[in-house]
Image 1 (cartoon, helix red, strand yellow):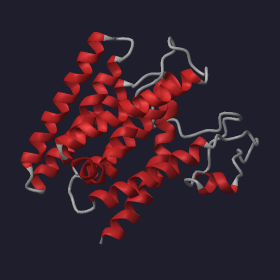
Image 2 (cartoon, rainbow, N blue to C red):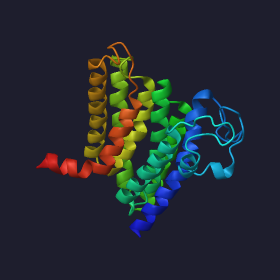
Image 3 (spheres, rainbow, N blue to C red):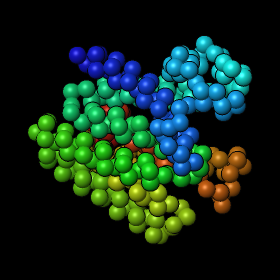
Image 4 (cartoon, helix red, strand yellow):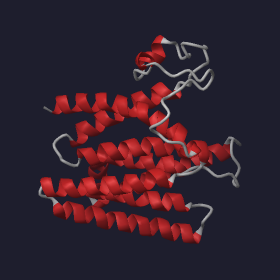
Length: 256
């Protein structure tokens, strides 16, 4: 049964990844993610359904538009494949829990927000707010179905604590911690806190650690200067996913 859940989740992840490509491109431009249908950015030809199969179509077309041969970024199949892998891993981790839908929705949001933050240095409210509401509600449903309302209360408390910490950091150093990161932090705290407070601490710590290491590396290689802004959203997302997937063995090792 676990294998079936993993396979279905990965397959759905491919499809969701295709939709996320639309979200990543259109949301920062304040465009609808529903209409118009996807077009080639070069010739504006509508993309045919058989040319819109996740990953496979890009490989068959060798990364080019069928009509005008404009190059199609490798990011598109990477987002699709990456989302499928991420959903499969989360299904493996949470296959026996009603919390799985919440984590799948969270993962989709993390992919979209991370890439948008890398492109624009923004975490759009159009994604952050619906994602926060949807994930929180899904954890509430999981609490009822799994008989774990105590887990849900703990998750909410962790979300509030993480939000308070990020808000304090923002007030101390607005340039170092943007308010978009503050708004984003609550849903991450909820998702991590559902597992345990220790997992919440680990996920946030790993996010800061990864951000610091990469930031120092960029400055050392002179890719960035101390005055340049480095988006923190992707590191928050990566720390969260890492803690969810490999947090238990890390925490056991630390406890020894």
